[in-house]
Image (cartoon, rainbow, N blue to C red):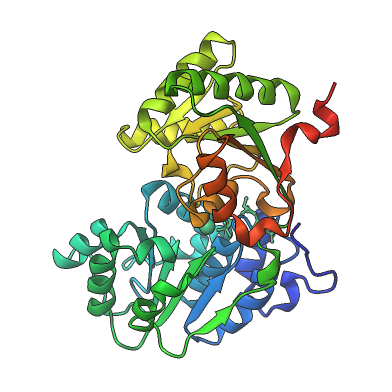
Length: 376
Ligand code: ADP
Ligand code: MG
């Protein structure tokens, strides 16, 4: 999956001793391709578009850039924007870990304690508006999940934040995909940006795509039951560590949760209407390996890093190709092997899915039950 350079280690990338120690503490020894390319170019101060498959270590790229850029004698110098609080919290964890050695020194600095701020667009906007964030010395703006942040619900906040920061600043956008339709708005935020994009054609390496069909032309209750039977077959037939099941509707998430419970498969569920703390707890349960199955709408299909998820099941076909990529980005993270199984109704749902996935057809979408391991 992720090809890690044999010769180049973080040691010869001209990073500070503190960051190198932080990386060692994080267990990062060799840079991933995006880290190999993105860090040196980013350190030059150029605006960057970091494009790489989910799970290939983009967070560390911009975290390292931020940590290398700040001078602990000054105040706030870097702002990192993420579309959800969960992702923001994860970025903080990475910064605190890779930056843990720098933090030791920071504690000695009495004033100006905060050097990097991570937040969601709305929150950052209001903090800047209320002058709770003093942005005069900010020199770096990072947008994680940039394609999401370019959407209508976020873009005006992003533009606001961008406009309130000093003109002289480095802007870094990180995303698994940079679709054409966001190019124009990105151009308003960056100057002569360098597009870092290792092995663009390897977006999906390491993931086995499988489909399995159930009858259509039946009422939806019956179809859901058929899909559920197929789901149980998958859960019992495939050896997985952890699994995320995606549904298109909240009601379906609830329903599958209950049905799985009855069938003896405890699961966690997560959706946008939940309290923030409940959502974080559900994710933590997964990350701490206290549960094997998480059921979700597309809320967690972005950026959430759960290391042991090796199976993603689409109970319903995702709405578009990008969503499919984000969903399956849950598996195959940093070098682990993943399988993505879509349970489709024959006919329209299947046809739409196959058309949508035309870009990866070449990589062969196989039928699930041709798998040897599950044949018996
Ligand atoms: P992305 O943002 O590109 O989707 P993440 O930054 O969340 O990916 O990283 C995915 C996983 O890979 C994380 O668990 C992270 O700890 C791990 N990781 C990142 N860089 C390295 C590295 N150089 N060596 C080992 N593990 C790494
Ligand atoms: Mg990420």
